[in-house]
Image 1 (cartoon, rainbow, N blue to C red):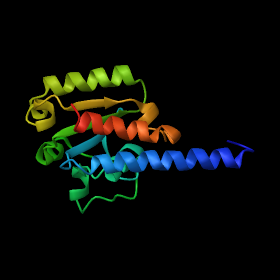
Image 2 (cartoon, rainbow, N blue to C red):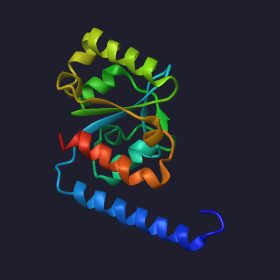
Image 3 (cartoon, one colour):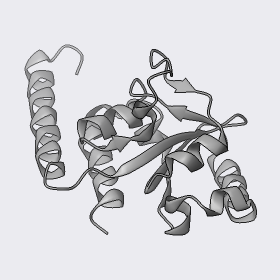
Length: 159
């Protein structure tokens, strides 16, 4: 809120209070074992430096990527193989799309249904693959961060 520091401070404080409420709510759940993928022409996993993964980390979710000590987590994305994803066997897969979301999501969904390697992953078997809106999970959602974090909780635990 340019030129209105009092209003900006109030919004920032309210936003942080809302985030803390979501984090407290998340603490009642057993951490979900999840993978966060970025769907582009080249698939990659999201490190804790990415928006969605940092939210999942604040919610104490169990990002399978963090179990791989050999992976450099200093970037937002890292390459991955379907074989490694299958070995990690996440309960939930969150997919953040960069580009033409509808087209990319459709193609990825078809690949999951048509490729037997995907069929063995717990999240795919149990229909726990969620395509997330880029406005909340690819770019910084700003004051909508509590809304985005609540959406992750809804998908992971409140269904």
